[in-house]
Length: 327
Image 1 (cartoon, helix red, strand yellow):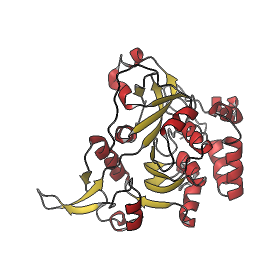
Image 2 (cartoon, one colour):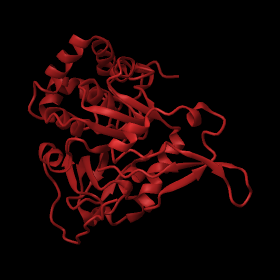
Image 3 (cartoon, helix red, strand yellow):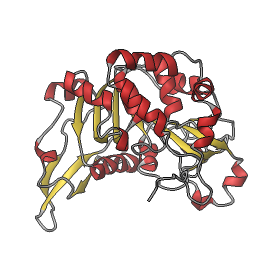
Image 4 (cartoon, helix red, strand yellow):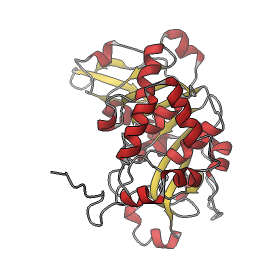
């Protein structure tokens, strides 16, 4: 793992998504995308990766969703280490992800959700692996997606998927999973200061481990808040400013996925996406309309429309919008 250069300067890290992606994401990188299924995907950042055509990427994440599907659908991701890739009830397996696997245009190696989180945790701790019982007795142990040649040719890929050994204290079987240190982690969060102090409200999923394991971190956020305000309740903050390289201010930056307490997932858009993504030509049309046909994310949101965005705003004290037909 490369050593992180830590600076105590309070220089602002706020920059447009275009600049942040251009500065910290490169062709061939190992990237990690935050969020969990249709929650807090870093869509604004992924749109920029798409517009800049940064390809040959290696993605590592536990539960991919819309952000992952867009990158795979455009052919920018070639390798994936993952536990789960789905848009919740809108697609039990992400549409373009499934097509890419079936067509052989992406190579996948799967882990359990817990194993993936432990891999990020090991990377964050600076140790080579962590032990677990997770996966014992399952095909996760037996079936490997990456062959030996691929492992030798890509430095970001571990030379073994995992190792089953014995606990030296009890002699019972254990699974050893290798650490992962992404070149860059992309996250969408609730609040950040201009120098990078970051706060996530609600479930953090594996975002904290993903950020601490990465060589670089870009966060897009719903709101910019002063460092002084965030430090009044430091126990609510997820990372210090030293961990974050770039801050992108973008309300609704996770659309069409949800951002707890701010807005719900956009079921109308996700249903539209599922239908369009099922056909190669219509998927191209989707990208031309919503990604390449606009110059930035605010223009994308204008296409979605203020009426639709207002309709998915979270109900106060509930966290998500209240649905008429909810049980």
